[in-house]
Length: 227
Length: 87
Length: 219
Image (cartoon, rainbow over all chains, first blue to last red):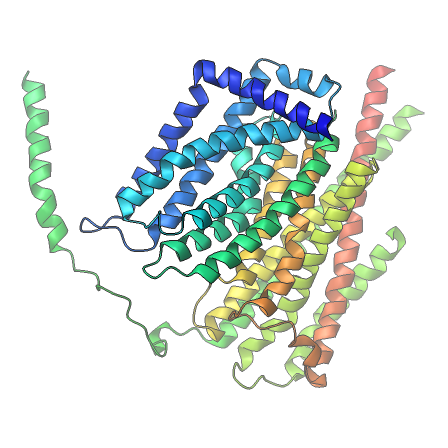
């Protein structure tokens, strides 16, 4: 068991080391996420104010778009340097490799969300500090569900033609339930009178989906990646 | 220089014309107005709907059956040709 | 299964030709009138849509984990049929809804998740078509995720309050509505099984043709 986590940790460290040197993926993803929030704000604002209840939707759309971009770029980097084959050939448990890549992606998305949430709070007057723990839980569980499926699909598509367009096409229909739960839960917390039981319900559903998606992804990573 | 001035003039004209054009359009209603019953002009007769539904089902199913049948015939012809060539 | 395809197709074609008269004989539903008769085609299509997803998932599992090559052809046929029956469901449903609910579409759990499953089938087929070599395994992995939708779709109307009727409606139908329903259901099921077999056969024959071409090239 500890071997599993050791391998995953090595992979996370490797990705972090490469990323810290160039910071390419972090900055571009961050800037892209901020642009998405701004574009949506301009599209929706009327008479100088945005309608109520859009903050949650815009936040999660930005996370989803930025996440897709980040996934694609991370594995593109592996493909470009041909290190994916080295990872597959290494005498390591395949699910451990998957977990390592997933944790790296979660770290990246976590950093993006740390910037996005205050930005959305600022632009839309959303009460991000009223239920901080629930908000963090919502964001964490939603991002885990999205990233779990995304890491698997991005890894799958690395050697496939037209992988850039196919990743969103494959990913979104399957992760939309997670997105819906995330948006509804966040919207319940951002309301004028926050609806805590509702947010708790959506968190429960997200945890349920995370468990299912993670299990299925860990299970299918090996047969799908084997040539 | 002249070309630049002409472009600027066009740009300023467009800027000046846009606000009146926007204001001249009819204002949309400020909030959602619910209706109790769809006005007769907008109602669709039930028989049209039933016919459209059944018609679509028939067309789609027959289209798919035809597509499989033609592809199957083609592949089987190829198969017999290849197998006779093998001998 | 192959031997049954011709009688199945013949029988289902005959039944579907006769169906309009049987459906016409069924009583009108009290609030919706004529437009409710869409139900006799909508319900079988919807059930077979879900069944197609399950079949695709099962065969994808066999292909990925039990390494059965032939299972891949069956998964592909199930996905295509899922797309077809999904299209039937998602067209007949809104047509009925326009009259019964006043709108073409609502974003309730049943309709949303059905649309998502339809999109999953579409992306599965796109992956197989445009993904290049090796995309069968990837698509199979995806089909397993898609299969998770099915129980959710079925149960969603009972858990949440939606416009869509609940699953308790069909078992409690009066007999003179039940007969046309199960008649159409039988016809559609036979059609489904026949088409599934034919499409899988087409795929397997294609694989044989390719193998023969390869053998010819090598010889």
